[in-house]
Amino acid sequence: MTEELFDSLYPIKLKKLSGTHWTPVEVAKKAISFLGGDETKAVLDIGSGAGKFCFVAASISTCKITGVEQRDYLVQISRKLTEKLQLQNLNFIHDDLQNIDFSHYHSFYFFNSFEENISLKDKLSKDHSINSTLRDQYIVLIRQKFEVLPMGTRIVTYCGEASEIPANYHLVKSSNKGKLKFWEKVRDHG
Image: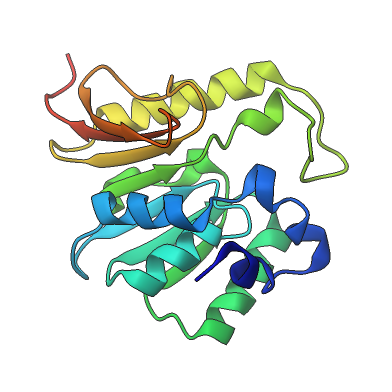
């Protein structure tokens, strides 16, 4: 599937945000090949936005893919597309990250979801403003959630500083000029 074909599934407003906020198709393919496995694996997209990573991943993998997003209108669009594309291994949750139990998932995808709190470029919501304190709180929260997961847990980060990745994870490899990073938990916390 090409970027153009995929983006054509979205309303015009969301198409315009694709270059800034949505995962490129080739990046999603690389990410799910590292994160995935068989249908027993569960992958969580943290801050799934319009669900582009999730759709690509679910279409080429048998893993159970879940996207969590705090904006209800994006979750509703994603759920409608899931029905239209008849993807049985895909689910979207409308919730805040702090309410999600990471222990239900084997691996995680994270595309710089908190950037919107420090940059208003192509903002997703009219009411959104700069809030670096909130960004920092989310980074600490996600790092704490990652720290306690079992050995072998995998994470893929795209863009950003990867400051949410705890020291007990090893950088396995990187791609896309260092923007795409593949992590695995190699030791327990402490």
